[in-house]
Length: 517
Image (cartoon, rainbow, N blue to C red; front, side, top):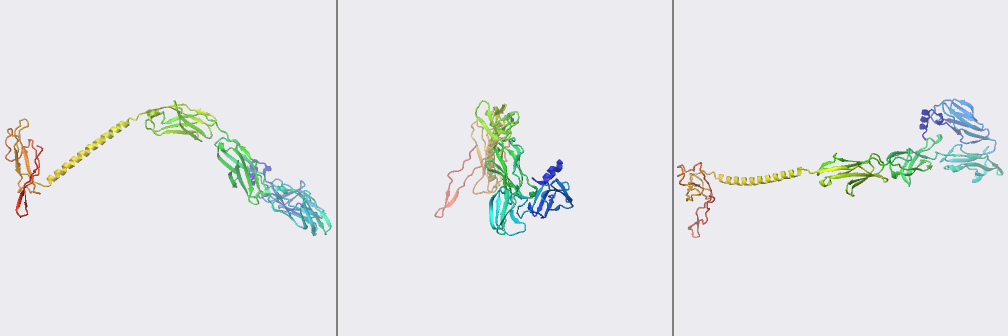
């Protein structure tokens, strides 16, 4: 656990028991010394407390107050210290004995530490046939004096140790037994959760909690979170917490965490905890339609909304029409509302509809809603307008074609730019009298009208005899009388030379005959 966090918690709560304790360091770093040796003790406040006077305690009694944080001692027994407003430190027990051989072991040993065990004679006399024992069993032996090296200590290395050796080749000496206690580098992690039975879809926080001794507060740790069977939720991160934003039914199971150091590698795993989800039962199933009221026009979009007031997890929504057993639609969602859509409703879709919500434990229906579909009256109107427009367009096209054709013919006639001569009048009796019709033709003289392509242009007038009399002397028909003007092409005789050089007269056998009177 972070020491800064502990300090802040203690300051807020006012409980000094939660304040980090100072630590006593020993130099040289042993627990057993020869009688008369001097040992330097240092009270380390771990930078949480300002430097000042330090109070030292020996066997529970205040020994001395020093201006700094150091003191030199040579008496056996437990020692404690206190600096400023800090609590008392844990005790360190120093052993001073009158023997010729001792086994030196570190007074403070943690998991992962490298350790040295040293069998030493008081006057540094050369030793032979040195043997080390753990719990009264030999585990290492040397012909010459040598230290025992443990590269990475573990809790299993804890025990009662001593050594034997031969002094001056024949004198066997035995050290006193000392207890080697390997401390945990950090405690076994404990996985805690905000709720071991969370509501489905709710937020869940997992926290991997450990305790770190003050002497090892600077170690770097990596945290991993797992779910059975072997699913890695978070691997080797520095964060002690894992948040699951939405805890679903399939997330139920066993959870545990794992903590390991970066170097040296010490790995520990928490006990698994069981997490099971709680479901909120479905209630308040309701269906509504869009547009509201359930009155729609044929071809319009219709939406059936099915909702629940309460419920968690995956909910299966189904839509039905009364009088039929077939399901119109089905959706399974992690939502409190779902919709079914008619993209273009038909007249036959009118009727009563309802929906159901299923939670794998209970199926609850909604009330029914009536849907009425009205025919869209704009359809025949649009069809009629379309037909009328097409007919009008066809008539306009025909009229334009006739007009263009007439204009083209009029242009050809007017292109000759002919000056009309007094025409020949033609009198005609009415159709009832069956009187003979008199046609009067008059040639348009060439001195007045140019001849183009050997074509002679004439005008023919038709008049009725006996009633109106002769035409005016001007030769023009009366303005108020019926008249018809017909243009006809009359081909002339054409002279062509024969093979002898004489000319021949070729008569046009078929002359254009005026029609249309």
